[in-house]
Image (tube, rainbow over all chains, first blue to last red; front, side, top):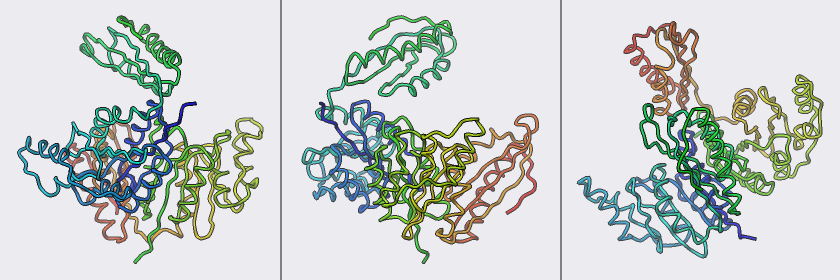
Length: 267
Length: 267
């Protein structure tokens, strides 16, 4: 039997606890982790308070293999995540020169100098690796300790997602279960993206561990060309393939009704 | 100083942990509780497993005054919330005759008999009070123990919200801080609801502890009549009133631009 990889998601931020923000970061991450074969066993939202964050990180280190935090990485006084990670792991906060350069470059482009607040984002716990933020300024954090991995990502969804895709997946792949991911798709000509969108949404709801996307390549109304792409994962490769094909079959049926033409199929 | 009332929200359900559902129940509840002067200090999503639910309920009883769970109240085998509440409190599960009648009535309307699965929803921990579910079938649970309150609500948002508004607020009012809630509003003629909607959304984001809603009373395009209603809360009554008035001021300005007519103002 394959060893289960358990993850905890810690969402840090009072704005979630007062109901100003719905925690879409957690649902995005849990969907993405599930797809990668990881079992998410807790999603916990904590206030912007060191003691609360430390408490939940410690519990997570005890119960999970992987902890991903979101939020609290910025330059302001209430961004306390990194300090809390260091405290939970009993590690010193050190100015990381790679992180420093990443941040400096970001602000140089905007002709802004480094300040104490900006420098704050370059401090990482000992042994921490900064994760490049291609969208925003605060680098993420990757840290391995006692066979556990802790990752801190920003709270801004676009930044969080970019760092996860570009910097996290490759770093956690070694602990991921040997799951099979299959990609299938086709080109669809003659159907506007907005006409096929409800069907993709239905498929997304119907299947677990399946991603379906349409990429518009033509002109929406006058000359619609779409690339339909589906990714399916499963312990068993043929099951993953079957799932991907079933999903595409639904799209094909709908496309036929709308007089769309399918070509360049692959799986 | 007013004693702080702390609440934990426990969201129960694997469908959240695999990212199939975004936890909008938690954001709705935390907004509503914040408005009532309660401080939400954790939102925790747990799997549909007795041990996990028990663990977090026990922690919650230790750290908060109020625990609200959502999800896991239905008739199926994976609905384990009530059993977990009983276990966490070391109480017996007892067939509650009021709950039984509530459920029986619901199914009688649909000409359906009571079954073992339906009867399951009538078992509550000793001392538990069933909360009437005006939308669905499973009653909620209200339980007071050692100066703590634990409330279990269904996972279906419409049911959860209805029980909270109709059955929960009056029961928790005795532990709520003496917060002032002010209601102000006016009638707006000549502006379609869809034109004013973005402004209401902006206001919702701008102010904390403030609810703004439009109730359409006319015909959207040909004869739009809206009731605009705002609820604001604060420790201080005049502050709450000020906040409500500021919010309505923004609506008024926008209404003027759109040639709307305001009447029947109250505050």
